[in-house]
Structure formats: structure tokens, C-alpha cells
Length: 340
View 1 (cartoon, rainbow, N blue to C red):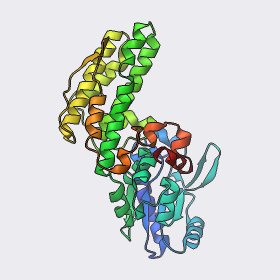
View 2: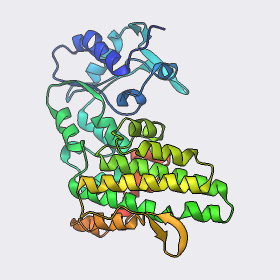
View 3: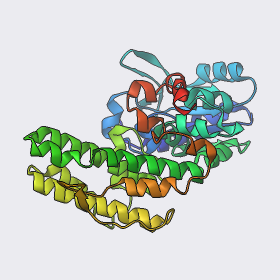
């Protein structure tokens, strides 16, 4: 195999040198969007062993079947040493130039035509990893400007939804923050460690939310978090939490992490300042943040009547983490009943 180059770079060259000349001046968009490490820019040499190679989305409004057939017939067998037709697992080998109207692709990938706008429930039903697949990939052509428009629409949550999601994420922490000490108190060292790891994950996702960054799927959560700004030592505190084998050290490291995220919350300024301090969990010997104080501060700034009427369950990927749900729009859209 030739030397590794990131897929975004390979696909751009593939578009310019191979695909664009066969479009005969047809107005179109072209991009590397959707699923995969390569869309997020996290692909590496290891990625090339499994379903990796030049791929492209071509967006046209008319003559879809004719353009698709023309391209399929004229694509080469390889490009810069990489096979153009490849498969993986049970997926047969084929080329990966997908021709589609943009609106149809959005409905297939997100479950909603975001060019028509996103209602409150549309936002809540769309996993962050799916939003990221639209806004994080590379765009090589955009004759109509619609790609730019939909990416601008999806770039980040509307203000009211952001505030509500932050409140829900703080609420998740509040539900379990006392369990690290409680499990250890009854001799359940494994339960204490597992709970701490869950809280670390939720703190990472909360920190990304505070920083206006969508969380990717689980494989890349740590990578995305690690590449964000960490001037307050949060990354080190979370690492110490995971590495700790003694309850006291685990609780101390987790407490420092709570204080770091609390500081970030106050720095963002969406709510009135909330005192960033640890305290006993009621009369029990567990040092916690009492995170619902931050959740309540967020909810107090939510004025949207739809959001105010909902229980604090959060968006679909705060409710479930099953890949078989979050990767299937027809499945996660069925959870609209949560927001009825």
C-alpha cells in the first residue's frame, strides 16, 4: 500500500482529478460527510485496514440516476495506489461515490431535512455524533450554497436548547455523584470505580457542551476531549480519577474535576454564578459538588415553553447510548414520545 494520507486529503484529490471532470459542468456539491473516523479527521494508518479509501458525496438536484451511472462506469480501479472499489465485513466491494440530492441525504442521515429548519424536538432527537458528521467533514464544492447553509444551521444548538441540555447533563452528574463513596463504604471497590468512570465520561461530555463542541461517538470521545483546551487541569484530574485504586484518592481527584468543570460553567456566564465548592452529601461522608445546583441554575434560564414542560432527561444521546439506536435515524426518531 502507498504511504498513508488522511482521507479528507485523498478524497479531495479524487474529486478534483477523477470525479469533477466527469460531471460535465453540472452544478453540484461535493463533500466527505457522514459516518466514520475520516470525516472527523481522526483516521490514521490503522484505519486503512478496514473499509477505507477514496469516497465522496456528490449532491445534485436533477439527473441523479444518469450521473450516478456515468460516474460508476468511468471510475478507475485505483487512485494513487488505493482501490476505488472496496468493501468490509459483509459489505461487498463497490465504489463509494454517492450521488444524491442534498435534502434526500439529510433525511437519510439525520432523519430530518435540516434545510427546512430544525424544531425543538428535531434537535433533541438528533445525536451529537450525527450533527458532527454534517458540520465537521470536508466540503470540496458547493455551487448552490446549500451545504454552507445547512452547516451553519447545524453548527451549534440554539441558545435555549443549549441551556436545557447543560441542565440535563448536570442533572445526570447529580444523580450519581454520591455513589462513588457509598459503593466503597460497603466494600464494593469495583462498583465505586465503575461509577467514577461513568462520571468521568459525563464530565467529558459536559465540558464539551460548555465549550460548544459536539461529542463524537464513544471511540473518539477521549480524543475530542483531549484536543480541547485544558488550561484548568481537568484532563489530569480525570486521568487521576481513573487511575486511582484507593477510594480517598479517587474521590479527591474527582472532586478536583468537579471544581474545574464548575469553574468552566461560571466562566461561560449563561447563568448567575454558582458557588464552586465541595460539600458533604447531606449527612453522609461523601464529598460532592451537589451538581443539581448547577442544573437548577441552567433550567432557571430556560424560557422556551416546550423545554420547560419536559422532564430533565436530555437529548436522545443523553437518554440512550446504544449504537444500534444512535446510528439508525428510523430508530432514534421513534423516541419522539419522550418529548410529547
